[in-house]
Image (cartoon, rainbow, N blue to C red; front, side, top):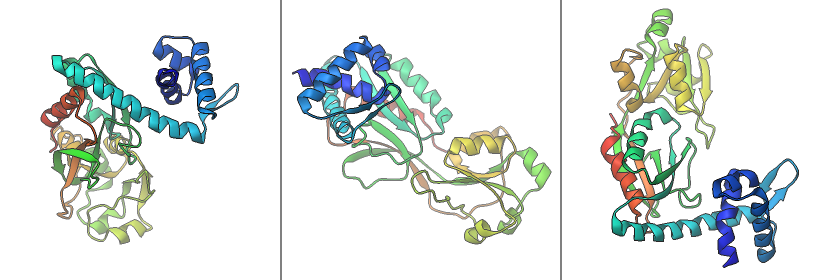
Length: 295
């Protein structure tokens, strides 16, 4: 019983990296957090944290216990949600991972919070590959279908990628119509966070273009940063159509050249299939499926 009581304390301390912050979240003192962690370590017979006067980080055993602890707390929360669903009120904490183009999701998130004020959202904006089950997320939104049998999915929509730039940039540098003409431009490239590789553009002769000495390149692992630079007139970017189309309609971005008619990509909402779907998660999935429009 003592171990279970200490589990939420340990998870809060691990996630915040601070006894003080964990205490603030749980409404107790940092000293109480430290004593609870010490009792838990004695009971388990292992060190969960490496602690100095300035830093605190998980041990290998602590990392493993965090993964298991999140799963246990998740199951308890599911049980609570099942009871709460009897009265039809979505309530509790949802841990969600969304692509780093955060501003695109804010209108739907705002609506969701207005509809379900008793749901607490913990959002992680990142483009890295997420293991939903191992990292104890309730749901993630990612590009691309999945064949992971542990997951359920809802396709939010399908899209293409557009080559775009700000009108002011194109007025200054010129409007390329072929791949060869792109070589004289500043190209804003996306680098996959997990592999470090550059995402190919859907244009003929991409490999040769990437090696062309005339090509000025900027690369990063953030779609949001590329979008900001493109809007600021810093170059040509290749971005998802659900990002670019509203901005092209407002004449803030302009299509640069026709791209190859490649396969459509999917924007997919994923969640674990290993447990009954809590009411709070059902509300989140239904809200995004009905209100986030992919063009």
